[in-house]
Image 1 (tube, rainbow, N blue to C red):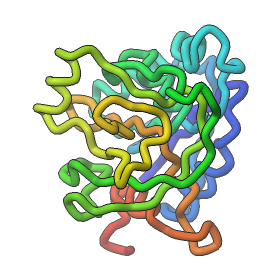
Image 2: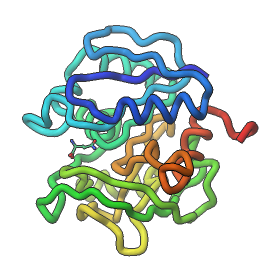
Image 3: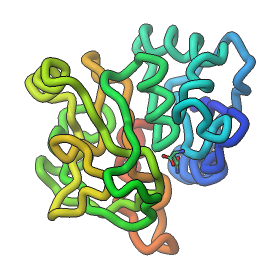
Length: 224
Ligand SMILES: NC(=O)CC[C@H](N)C(=O)O
């Protein structure tokens, strides 16, 4: 499996994502700079977290207008898997590849802590290695993670099972509606999530709950 990592000024989780992909797939991702208009032939595209363009205007708003995101949208339409984590999730929402928006945390403070997630749909390409309703640990670090969607959109994504991760055990760190921590598009090949699974990959991280997400996305389950 080949992976492309989208790079923009201000992202700071690119090295963590690179390390996770390399460890799990055995090959480092190719880095694709924001001004590129084409993405090489890959099976997975990752958009890491951070602070693209300093979070000016709205988190992810400027990044979403860079040419590389048009290329990501084209690949997504062809069925290529896409994962956006934290700022990557914000960029996917601003690009329109996922529905809804991420507002300022309800506390109006940056939160950096570990939360618990329940896997509310384990029938996707990204979550199929988890049990249904399994509770996993995952770190978060953001100030704009408060997921919101209008009532009609919310009804649709809930009815279609697009919500794949919810904050569990009262650990919702940001006020997200319905405790939504991560969701997929209708086709199921684009995942956006606020928590950072790339930071819980090897025992030195204090746990490995994020590992199975990448193993599933990279089709590495049989060798796991
Ligand atoms: N770790 C991150 O990706 C941070 C995301 C975003 N810039 C925020 O603070 O909300």
